[in-house]
Length: 239
Image 1 (cartoon, helix red, strand yellow):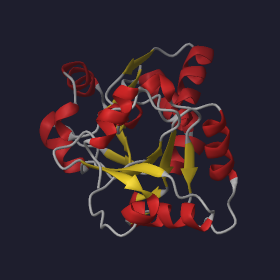
Image 2 (tube, one colour):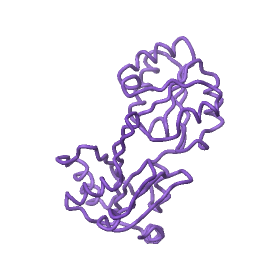
Image 3 (cartoon, one colour):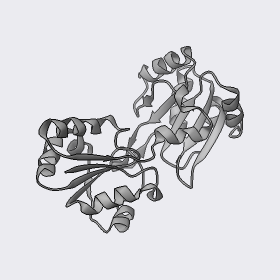
Image 4 (tube, one colour):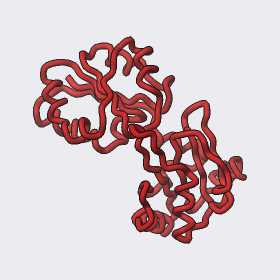
């Protein structure tokens, strides 16, 4: 059997359901390429189990290897946030159904729900955009932003990261990218959402870029058309 387990946004988010499932498994893979979340040692201490760190190649390209293991024994793939917020894991749902392998998905908190702390209504968000490291000539995020704004929708920008090599695109880099593309709107700069260290700052891009953001993971949100309650909530974070 294969367990797809969400770990949430911090160590305390892990559910009883997740803990019980992990303890049943002979092998536990912790993907280590989509978040700067808690270290494996913290979760090993909680579960009294040894984890295998899994890179992108193993999880995405060698999924057949893990499916073969799941035919013979209980294994778990652990993801920070929610396991199906990362679309790559949908491959496991498909693979298990096709091969007759039992699968159980254990959901958890995700950046896609934590952004509600800004005060923006989740159903007013449009398509999500990602800003990559080498973004000088990248225009797709700007097109997504403009398309969302034309519909009055909010835009969440996820920022590129490479935890294996300890590289993270910072909010300041993202804001610089937006300014270089002649975007200077109000935005919410969010750091470590869902943790005790979380910070939310709201204001013009040209003003926020002067601040320092030292807590990770980070994201940027540009609001679309605002409900009066959303306006009131965002003003709580104004700089």
